[in-house]
Image (cartoon, rainbow, N blue to C red; front, side, top):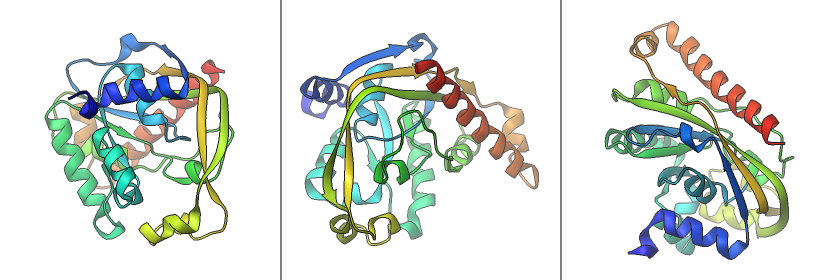
Length: 239
């Protein structure tokens, strides 16, 4: 059914919101292998934008509270997203589920900046620090052909509104310290946005061999830095 098709839902959402999407370098998207999509993140629109831009469903890991709010849970699951578990099981559950998806040659999406830029409005061209979980996943997953695909979301025109009190969200996820403050969760809506696809980085056997012992920290840091640098460069091109 179309109402359960992530690509259809994504395109319809962009149409309803009147968003003008311009995609670049789409020829760099691998079509028949597992890919780990890594991107910057400021808006609830980022997941549908990326799916529409690369013309492929992407199974995004999303914040734990999105799986706790009834209506929101329905929307994100129909789009193929999977909410993260509570903190004590979060990391291992993410690795397990993402690995299963990648083993079936699906696309998995990760926003390594975390929730910070969603809660506190940041400049469109600013890129925060990356958490390294996606790099551990890419190096640990037992998949022969796996590409890490950096993608930049460059917003040209947008509006920012107040969506919901942060204290209200803390009822659904008291483990998130960002919700333990006054104020409202911002909602960034893009009117015009450019999506720039970077060069896919194929995970090699030598990288996986290096992912052990004292070398593991270095290879993870290198992969994280590469993706951060690539997305930063794409953002510069986008503006």
